[in-house]
Length: 196
Image (cartoon, rainbow, N blue to C red; front, side, top):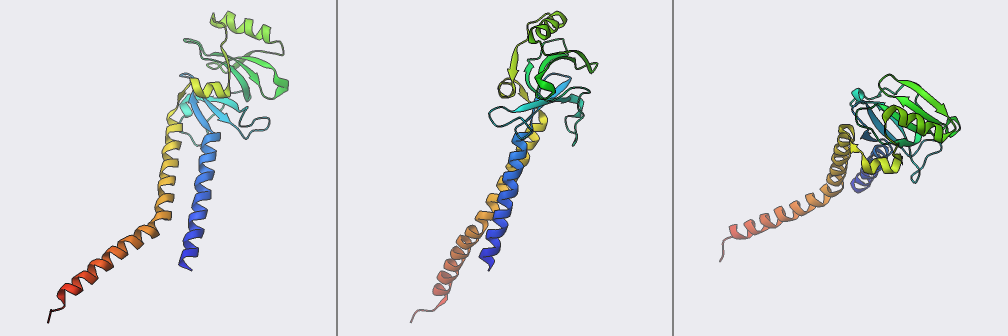
């Protein structure tokens, strides 16, 4: 009966831990620039493991449970890499017919929204004086710095895994300790028995 309880508890903890890890992966947080963070999603409609989507969140909300989103900015599948000294971005929306948007993170204003990628590229270049380096969410994960929030999620996952291992292995550890203690007890009793 006790073994059954241990198995049930271990299984439930395993499921809980696995779920938490999956959530952490789906909500990977990257530092985009000083103004914004990037959240990467795999379970959003139209997104998956091979083609994840992302959204930008305000950087001052790095430890908030519900970080603040930028106004009028949708989920995107492609975005320009950060440009030094500029908060202007170029992104391709997941929804809204896959339109291109040039957006100012500082003022939270849409500067241009169009289906014409060349027009969007030209607008971005005129504002930042740089050609856009466009990347998808997978490439973002490789290029951008992990934020403090992702590090905290990883730490939380490590604690859960360590606890799971402790729960699963503790019965075996207890048995080993009990066997050793019993052996020491028997040896001591043998020594206490007077020899004839």
